[in-house]
Amino acid sequence: MSSNPRARQTGVTLVELIMFIVIISVALAGIIQVMRFTTANSADPLRRKQALMIAEALLEEVRQADFTYCDPRSANADEAVNTAACTLKEAWGNEGPAGTVFVRPFDNVNDYVTASGTAATPFGSGASGLVDALGRSMNLADYSATVAITPDKLGEINAGTSADSEALRIRIEVSYAGDDPVVLDGYRARYLPRQGGQ
Image (spheres, rainbow, N blue to C red):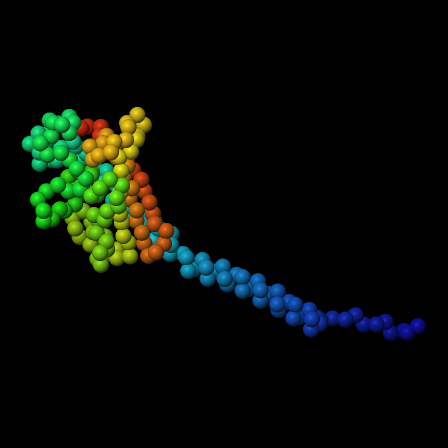
């Protein structure tokens, strides 16, 4: 028997050190990837919120337009209770002489599109981007907006097929820089046939 007890080993072995370095490296790489992904996509909520605000404003503009049986230029527009009583009936698209430049806001809901269910760009989406109701650029070149208006059933109101339907579904779609578009739907019912949007 030896009188010197064996000394206990202290420190780490080379294998343990390498394992520690590998585990810490993998964990650190994962954390950095998550931070990089979060940073790269952190602007999206702001852009999406901006697109939502644009869509809400444009939907409000369209819904506040008049919804009458007759074109406002019709002599009996205030008295008409159906399209048969109109001298100038409302139709899809702006009514007026060829070459007329129409400015927003339009005089009737159905003037924002040229045909039922067809998307149109009355809000401008050229090089200057979107424009407000007065035609001024909103300085939003990366955004574009379309509107589609379709006669639709709303509660007890049956869907029609023409611009003189009693209920219309309005769909606004705002796109921005190739991301998923923001789509809002709203309805407009003819609750006061001889009056505009109140």
